[in-house]
Length: 235
Image 1 (cartoon, rainbow, N blue to C red):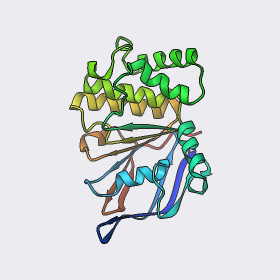
Image 2 (image 1 turned 90 degrees about the vertical axis):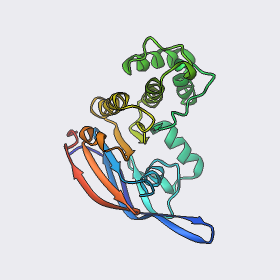
Image 3 (image 1 turned 90 degrees about the horizontal axis):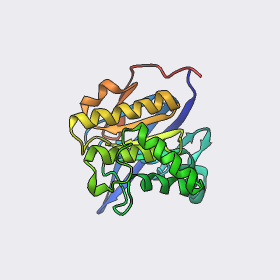
């Protein structure tokens, strides 16, 4: 069996809306494995984005534990949670989250510099990973000069550049047409297979199911089904 990357137990989270509290996660258990792409699907408001935030250290749950790479994430101080994300996690969002003033290479270099990598090595690694995602000819273009699909590939390159063990993608194809969406999911799947990363993708797009190793359906803050399509590679 492949190594367990995430083991979360009893996750609950509620938000206060006006005078009422809305429970968005209800005692959720979740696992993810290295070398596997897990797709978390469900309608808007099902709790899937809150789940990914709790798993990745972006939002503290009200209850429950998250063991990520063997570490109890929410027993750490806020500063150590931030460091864990920087060292071990890659993030891809539907809005791309690119800096308007930086070209494609600069977007990736900046993340690597935050990780303490020197400028020359960072540029070498940024160029290599941008070529991997098919942007070897677009290294010096800024976001305004890139298509939506190209922007998302820059975001993927930025996530992959530091070789994270965990990659979280929240609706990574919602702003893309079908063709570019397929490219994005293929690149994420390759990251799982070739780099051994645990990939967790949140989406409501049923067209992506064919690319998943595992499909989890959520609704009303709970996991309704958990279906394994392909076993993660053995370690």
